[in-house]
Amino acid sequence: MKYVGFSAVYMHIGLRGIAAILLVGALLGLCVHYGATYDENWPHPTGDQLATEYDTSVDERVLLIGEVISTNPSDETATIEITDDADETAAEIQVHGVTQSVAVGGVVQAYGTLHADRTLTPTNIVVVNHSSWDGGYKLVTSVVGLLLAITYFVIHWRPDFRRFVFDQRTPDRRNLD
Amino acid sequence: MAELLSHVLIVYVVLTCAGWRLEWLTQRWVAVGMIGAILPDLSRIGLFVTDATIETALGVPFSFGALQTLGGLLLLAAIGSLVVADHRRRAFGLLFVGGFLHLLTDGLKSWADGTAGAWLYPLSWYRHPTPGLYVSSDLWVLVGVGTVALVVTLIDLGILRPMSETDK
Image (tube, rainbow over all chains, first blue to last red; front, side, top):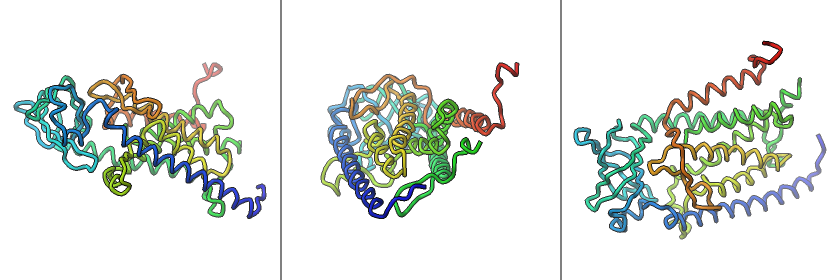
């Protein structure tokens, strides 16, 4: 391995540190810009907009995404909860024409006409989670995916705390052939 | 989005197969691409700290949703490439490819209004039509991708050998 002196190491760490600070700053700036411009660019009402200016969306075709808080299979309706940026309840909307199988705790997307009486007549419904079990399934498999990627990475890379980097741990199998 | 395991396996399959053609694309670089597959889902930080909490703390609008876009991915890949000892451009490229495959896969899922999320931000807020191939809780996605990943692994390890012209 090529020898790198201490001063060179710290210079590289310093440059990378400056680059990292700039990039993290840019990322925060992007999150701020995204947050500031999302509502005006998203073609459908957000939770915050439903909570504060519901009437402006009445008789409009909107896309709502929410968790099912009650169902009534006899009249094919389900009530969904729309949340705001703070994950607080912004609106509860009764969706008509829910013929798909969905239980309380499930998540649906409903696209259709919003009415003043806080109901929605959909032209299309997509059931994202049929029940809370689907949410649990996605959480567990996502954690497994996270662990798989990290484990595979750690098998091939080792942390070098002196240089604040990850370095090659072992020669690649293909190179051993 | 599909669950994260499918995203990671899709990147593993694509990059491992590409590695059969590209000499430099070895397992350790496939591993970097798999980390890239995680990057767009860093927006899930929002499950633990809401946008509203950050907005209150900073006093400005804020959304972790930016991390699940092209712009967020570019910056995250650049940050990630800084902590790799060598070949930082390659690391950046593979982190980006891993994340891009994630965003691309998300662009195929079902939306009730028939158009995908605005993942092209900040280039555009355009929402392209989606074929609506799946929803994130579909088990068949993971079963299908997992099966392909298993076959690719067996081929890559030399346990399974694709039939060549000389075998026929």
